Amino acid sequence: MEAIYQVVGKGHGKKMFEAEFKHLFGDQFDGIEDGKHLRECLQGQPKLKGMCGPMYDGQHAGHPVVRYESWEVYDALSR
Image (cartoon, rainbow, N blue to C red; front, side):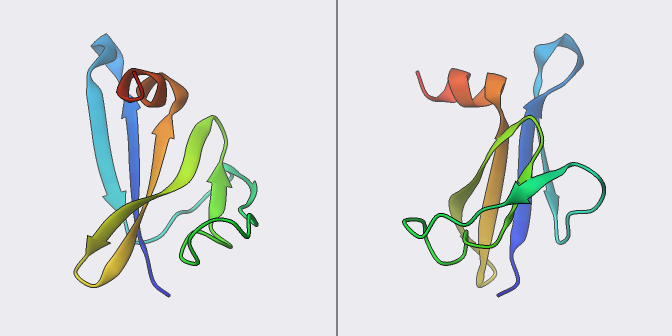
């Protein structure tokens, strides 16, 4: 199933940024999510170094949105 990837972090000045991708590339992968307790669309998705996720963030144009957050953003949004 094709997914949309959303990455959320904090940049210079600690301002939150969000970016969407149709594909993830590079050497930032830190394994594959294999938790059977997760939604099917999250199983087999890559884990990203230094990021929390993959997490489900709804649907967009009929595709699941797979979200990753920096730990700083995750902590701020989880309060």
